[in-house]
Image (cartoon, rainbow, N blue to C red; front, side, top):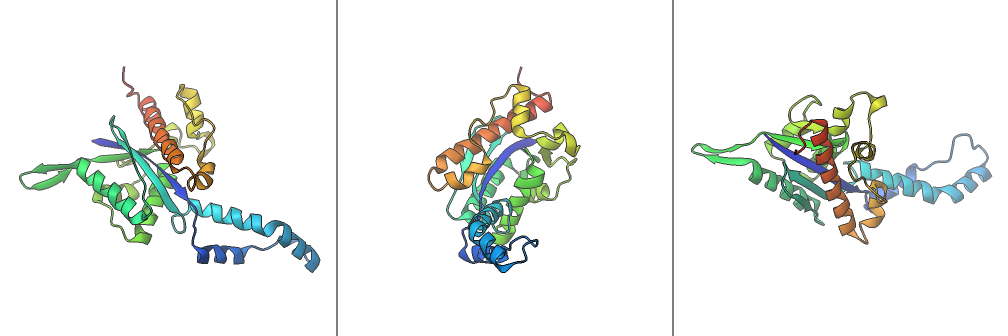
Length: 229
């Protein structure tokens, strides 16, 4: 069994057509009836409303895109992949997974069982990667497809958010778990800053993503009582 600790950072759409479609959906509150009130609301709020709506596409695999993916196998080093062509990014990720988990034998190549580990990986990372793979037509290897369709209790995925508590009211963010466990937290940078930082300082985003992989691994080790003694 091999554990793959994984985290992604995503970006909102930059497609002018999609942005135009989003802009066309921006409407004033239904409580405004007078045309002058509607015009005033649009003048004051439309630009900000469009910006907010476009930003939210960074959470959707239909419109957003992967900026970078960082990951580590078991106790190994943390890798990062980013590329202007998202198809190449995904292909490189899948190729590395196949390379690391493949085991040659007399009948061909078998693959080591793989468990994807991440914080909210079932709710966000894996669905986003799946949707981008579908949109771009990049076929994932079998181990990845199994993780896409895995149940929270299956062996293909270990979501540290759900491992801490499956109760929605008792789930904790990565940063809260880090503080509770004495693990260095996120500091003064978080996911909400990725979209504005990526164009000017992509390495800062990559380093942040890599640190999240390290934090995820430390949380997983603590939760599963498998920390090195």
